[in-house]
Image (cartoon, rainbow, N blue to C red; front, top):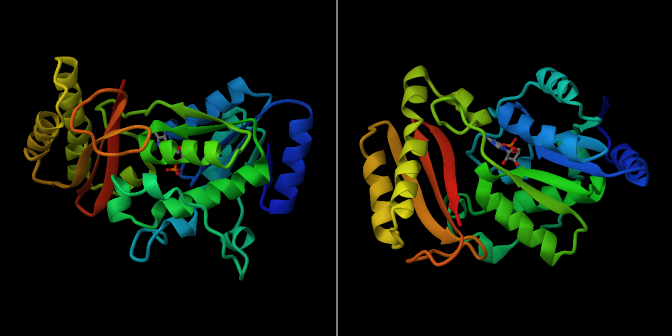
Length: 279
Ligand code: AMP
């Protein structure tokens, strides 16, 4: 497995790969877990070669967020990628990706109004810009993203369509711990007590989903149910729980098509997200 740190070299190697087959790509911020693993496995299975990027992208963190404390373990990540059959890992330094006069921004404004964009208004600009750069550098056939970050997936799907990236986006299901907590690199911040409380996020969403399955179509009772379940856990401080349609990510009062029900909450100081999609 190649480990590449230079943009020029990654571009040249990826072009070579693309000449003799399909190329799968999994962008990550590292500290890899089984959730990332499920994306890498699929990229390896469905393509002739697979590239994983490990890059903690500074532009998607706002001042005061956890950029400097974000967990990192490159050695372990490389061993994990190799064990899953990745062809190469791209691991650039921030100054390799962002030169001193870097000024371009890619954004999808209408999809970055609700959900996580309320509390993190600059986050998705950082995500879109880095993913656009990575797509140009790696030029994959298919790119794999987790639906755990559903808003990110729907925004990137819009970006790929609108900017004509010739790349197939593949959305992959959320991988969970045995107790239902969505796997996340940030779970490592949780204390033992917080970790025990954290599965309530999934449990609350499951109760919301059960209401929908029982025939409820109106937003208010679904959101109310989820909020009431979350309120039983004093360690949870809810940032938002929203029900939106998946095309424009606008709040919907009544379910008529595919919807995303998503939440963000703090458990202690750790901000966690989770969701379900209902179609
Ligand atoms: P990150 O390293 O957090 O930027 O995540 C890199 C990719 O892995 C993104 O597409 C995430 O949506 C995806 N991912 C993270 N956690 C999970 C999970 N628990 N299940 C499935 N995919 C995930």
